[in-house]
Length: 225
Image 1 (cartoon, helix red, strand yellow):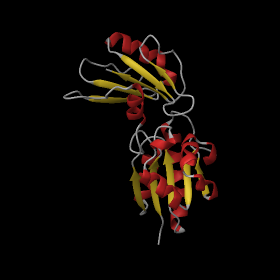
Image 2 (cartoon, helix red, strand yellow):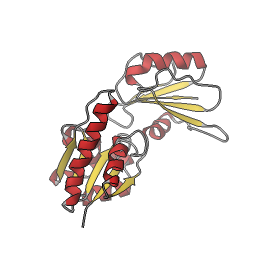
Image 3 (cartoon, rainbow, N blue to C red):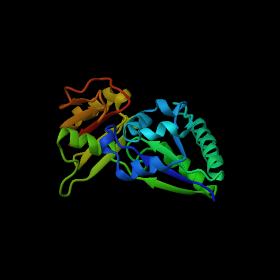
């Protein structure tokens, strides 16, 4: 029988926020895959390893993903990665593709999963705690209440996004676009906080727009209310 591809969310950074299902499945997987040149050096693997030390005994499958904006190059990487995974599934091995947060939210897994599924293999999404939920909890604020709407924006791709009066906003992957995001926030008049590297040892918290720096790491997330 062919193996199954699992997209396993390992949460935002704190291994204690991994789900029981994620921990169980990672123990059961034949192969651990992740985007990058070396699975063991990825942030997702580092997080999961603290909860599942047995992963050191498992085969790993790196899926190289160039950090470019050229869609043609990215799509070719997805096809190559899907083919690599399909080869393992054809051998009857189950593959756990680990991803930060939840695999349904701006995850490389979703692109590869579509290709693998179209090739005739079974695929499964395994939810994890999204970074913006963990960041809101870290700051002690609700993301949405009563009739409020919640808008999630990938700041790295849409730094010119304007925000209206209605609802609350999350700007994900804001690090390299923080100066643009800060400008948007000041124009909006909304209250904003930011968490960088949520749940990780080097987590940083900022409690207002004025505290937010012009630059931060890739895992910087802004909540505007």
